[in-house]
Image (cartoon, rainbow, N blue to C red):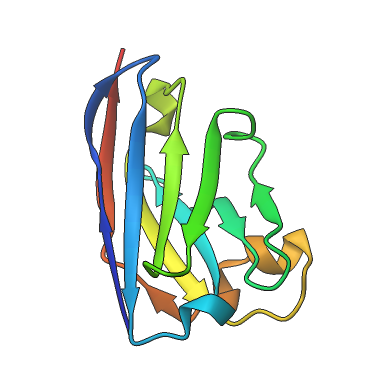
Length: 127
């Protein structure tokens, strides 16, 4: 299983970025896909997830209304559109995948639910 994240970079506060995560070796259409992030000196935290079965999306309060997660099953790719970026969004962003049968926010947001992780892509937001 490989998850290849890309799209990170340096952006000014208020700007936008779109992250991509291409999957291989995984049954993508049956995988819940998620983005987590880890800021310097902090623990990894949940950002957003999209359920494979229902297409339902879940967001952490810190990104709700600014970030949008989507997926393209034909391309086996998940995206994270990030708008109105803030310096507090500076972090390494990781994509993750797992077959999660539960449709709950709790299951989608829990790190231990995921068994496949990408290498991370750095997002830096300057003030």
